[in-house]
Image (cartoon, rainbow, N blue to C red):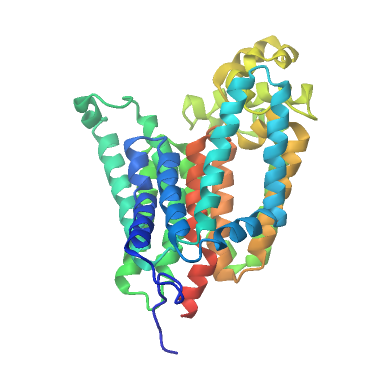
Amino acid sequence: MSQTRRPDYPETENPTGAVVGLSTAGQVALVLLPVAMWLANRSAPLMLGIAALAFVLAAAMSPQAGGMTARLRRMLTTPLGLTLAAFLAWALVSILWSHDRHGSLRAWGELVLPVGLTLAIAASGRFAPRPAWLRGLALAIILACVLSIIELVSGLSQRAALGIGKQFGFVFNRPAITAVVLAVPVVHGLWWLPEARWSDRLLAVVLALAVAALALKSESASARLGVAVCVICWLLAACLPRLTMTAVAAAFVVTMAMAPMLGIAATNWLPSQILNRFAVMTGQARIDIWVSFGELVRASPLCGAGFGTSATMHLHSLANAVSPEHRQLLAVGHPHDMPLQAWAETGVIGVGLLTLAGLLLLLRLRRQPAAEMAPRLALFAGAFAISVVGHGAWQGWWIAVLGGAILWFGSSELRGLRRA
């Protein structure tokens, strides 16, 4: 069957120069996101915001502007959209019993902003992961990886000479995680391009190696775990899609349900030989944090302490329910575990909604062909693994990076490219 190139815009549309320029600006912002994260490791929401503004303006100026509202309505009224909206609503309600409502509102806004920006880009109908842009993003991720590795090898001498940034290796943890997450849709997209050239697949291999190298060189155990889980899950899902899907769903539900007991389980079951191989904050200290927040969850399992309270949980009245020897660790800022943070802040109601949302997403993935489902399931498993042992659950940079990865998958677009 002959291969034909799909147009960047619908055949019924003749875009003006302004529309094309704005759409291009939005694409460039998304392509440069990993480089921006190397330079400033919380900049993902900014780049997503620039892209959203450009795409929405382009959509508003196009003849099909009215379709944006209809697309947004369709996304929000799906079972998954309604469940996520219910969680955001419950999180907002839970701020009523927060001890720091202003801080909780800021945390809620930090979560909602990148979610809204991602929805705006998707609803605009102007974004499409075209082959040229996939190649551009691959090169941007590789550049970010190389620059990060150079700085880590040199002891951050470049930043020290310029007098910018914190002079600590952990500042590259977020760029490393960003590279891991964004590389999954790009590797998949490049490999399955129509009439894929050997250079595209070579680029995909170089990208995968660059991301793995940064993960190994960085201080982020979360990034290394994410790479391992993504690779294993991708391979298994490609060979045994149904079995792998079932295993991931079961692990997801069990992990969400058992989060309050994570610290106790790790203390009792994790061998010291394995624990001693980790850095201090990745090892025993993190387990102690899980124990502390687990005690707090058991003090208020239904409603939690209120959304966004983890930042100053040691000042919350519920902290008095935690044993004195564990209370001090409530001041670390967050429990370094997304399910546990959801339990601590939103209780079983919030955790139930998030678990339902995750299962609905997996159900949608289950309906796709194995070749399309495998990388998406790998991203789900890898991102969830990272969130279980990594950063705060609602940090804006993390939500923005996840939103960017979802956009770059562009499931219907990539399937259309393969059929074209």
